[in-house]
Amino acid sequence: MLKSTKKIHLLLIITGTLFISAGIFHTNLWFDETFSVSLASHSFREIWSITANDVHPPLYYWMLRVLSLIFGKNILIYRLFSMLGIASFASLGYTHIRNDLGEKAGITFSFLAFFLPVMCIYANEIRMYSWTMVFVTLAFIYAYRILKTGTKTYWCLFTLFSLASAYTHYYGLLAVGMINAALFVYLCLGKQINQLKLFLIAASIQILLYLPWLFILIKQLHGLSAGFWIELTFPKTLIQIISFQFGGDLATAGVIHTNIAFAIAVILY
Image 1 (spheres, rainbow, N blue to C red):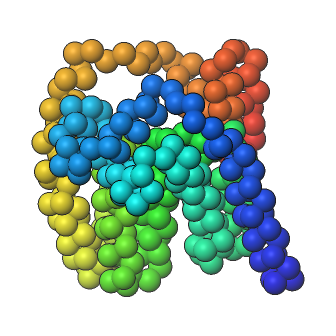
Image 2 (cartoon, rainbow, N blue to C red):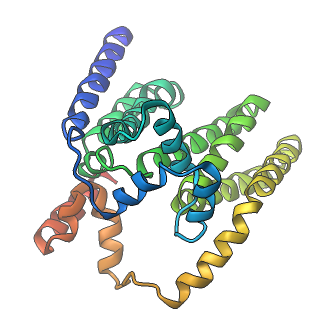
């Protein structure tokens, strides 16, 4: 039975990868993608300076730069890289979540990671969202494993993926900030002194290595506060946040689409 479930899971990963690959074979670009492609042509130092005046950290653009040095300026390679991000994210259901939480949880995770509408969007865009999801999820997984068996290897991986998340997108920074805070509270409540010492080391390393960008982030926040363009209306904004992954762009297309996506979200949650 276990071997059969593994085969089904692997078949799901192969099928899902083919499914999300269907839309990557084109060279059309929308505005944000042109920015990504343009930055890939700059040096690592220039990317740091340019993104300091934008609203995103530099790691994803550095990754694109590496690709451009290996394969040249190739839009299809850039799209393939985003698709591989979603494929890697979904594969965590087999490589990690199945081992930690069981076969059912692993297969469910992989299925949703491949076939939710929003995943199809992110798999095709030359943007940082797919790899942000990979890094944040790995940070969470290793935080969970630390709670079970807090080995130094898990602490190193947790620190690495926390930093990668923070340097890829500010949503990633917010997510790993919450994960770090939750981990700290749990260790305090459990009075796990040895693990708390390791947490303080890991947190210190994260802060120290993020410090060069932290000053830039503060400057960006100051600039954004004067011209913030996103409209927040409740409960509409909350409903859209909850339902977006189940409706993709359709979740904002109209009341009917939003309500359907929200209903699906409530049922699955």
